[in-house]
Image (cartoon, rainbow, N blue to C red; front, top):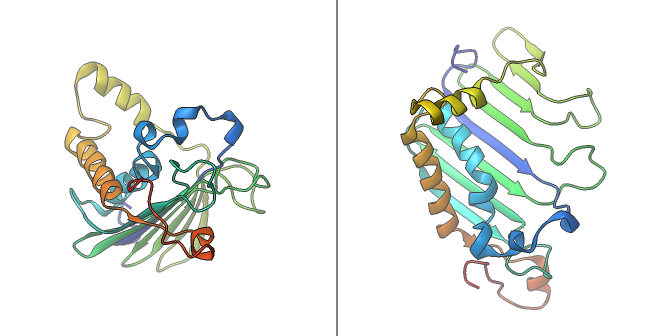
Length: 214
């Protein structure tokens, strides 16, 4: 993206499905007051990606939704959420959930789509479903061709830079302002999230309520 392979970024789509593994979770994980909600828990990563790839310092929250769709036994838990962000000509759609089925060989089919003015990128982060083995599969389409790039051996300097930033009080992995803005947007999206009415609530004739309202 920084090299201009797809032109100016128009939109990112970040998908963050996770496997619940209910038996492995501590009780606090299902307590809204302790875990904060699905948008701050998971969607903060996709917010980070949008700001970074779009090259913007801030964004507007156009839409935020979250709720408990399929786990009535844990009323304080949110299992699905989504956000739409806007920043100038660029936008983002973010979807996160706890619905990864047991048949998937990893904890989630995380994907990132980046649409640019002259091309597009898709990153299949953890699995290529029923396709190539391994993870970190990148697909690049531009004005010349459609290409597959195996990124499994790509260097990941971020974590070492972050560690050094903490020790040396520097900003090589990311700026403090970027980190704070991602957290701010995640918290605002969570606080403003519209409640999702599950199918079980509709079947009972209820209006449903968000975990925030509870």
